[in-house]
Image (cartoon, rainbow, N blue to C red):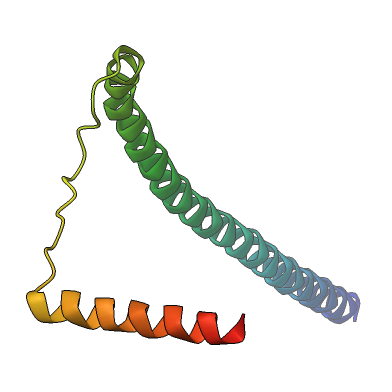
Length: 116
């Protein structure tokens, strides 16, 4: 009889230990999942910020290069030299355009004389 009681008690103890083991494993599994998910999210955020920062630094580098190119023009401007940009192309008007502009001017002058 004592053996039977001992076996039942031992069985209950084993069941409690097994149950506690699975509870602990379940907690460990979920706690690691949360930490892993947070770590993955953090790594993704770092990668995104790195890409944005790299793009911004590339823009800044281009702007600095452009400023460096423009610095040489300052001393030329102080000396009074002409700008080294695009040349202004003056388009000559055709005779018909000139005649039309003169007629328009003449009509405008006559209209202003009548008003006075």
